[in-house]
Image 1 (cartoon, rainbow, N blue to C red):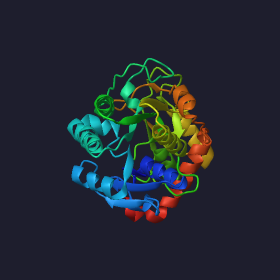
Image 2 (cartoon, rainbow, N blue to C red; image 1 turned 120 degrees about the vertical axis):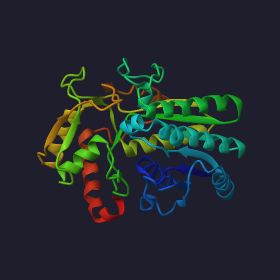
Image 3 (cartoon, helix red, strand yellow; image 1 turned 90 degrees about the vertical axis):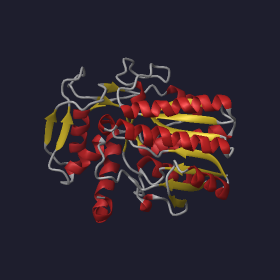
Image 4 (spheres, helix red, strand yellow; image 1 turned 135 degrees about the vertical axis):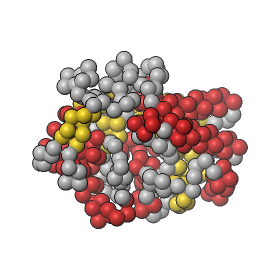
Length: 331
């Protein structure tokens, strides 16, 4: 049995590959390298450069490697970019997911894990947010992910396909062993950008929005370590392989930090008092997103091992420092 990981050369996908290989699983990675890096793929995984929307290629990989499960991470993820280029996001995130799901069904791949997002809840009123909370995305990014969730739901009702949808809150950090991390210099993740500012790679850090209805006026997010998230995916795969029914899981720690709290934590861990600039809100950013994550703990037995903001930041800092020797490869 082999797992096909789309987007496995990217940030979260590469950590899933690490977790699968560490667990002794056979893995084939499909990535077009538009935002990923082949050097982040574990050497024991089979790497193929290509697009998840290429149905003929995906069908060949399924047959060649005996794929019994697909973990789908490929996609575009920057919320403000989706507001500017909605059609690009619907094409890359929704149309290509349609092609991938159709290829899975046609080739009798019965297990599908989908990388979704808390952005599908939009400006949620619930806190914490449950899987049953209203779905009301406020960005094309969130809508593009919700559309794929709905395709999976309807496809599973009509075909022998079981799926697990994992809705991420704010993913951060890096592999504790230093094998992978957030490597795109254009990344907009707060902790990534803050560590760059701490290391002098940016002149300052922009804080977008100080007038939200929160204690300090900045957005509150639930930060989850990327390695804990990867472990959650492995558990979801085990669950599906053991006959588990299709299910949706929030992935977070059920605790939030404001932007300014994260900035202060990065300054503390790095021991650098870098400059911050207060800017207007970005389009599509809800005020508060905190995960209600009881379901994944109870159903999958997920128990996070790295639930600590300063640990997340420390791993991100070590990874960012390690990227300096690769700078010419990742710009």
